[in-house]
Length: 89
Image (cartoon, rainbow, N blue to C red; front, top):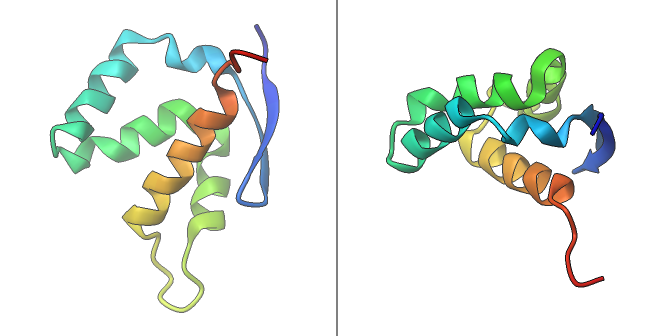
């Protein structure tokens, strides 16, 4: 399928939508859903690959220097929506 160029919250990246066709990633995401937030960094690394650190810098709060987990979750949701195949069009 190849990588697609998407922009999420003003951050442009190239990601392979096929990354979600990975049972291990699905398992990690299920563990995050079941309140094992410690799996979230691994999920992020699998999805964003070599762009992981750039994504973290984009999400970093300028005032605190931290990367808020709520912002990460919102960014990941928007990423998945941007990569999902559109239906009904």
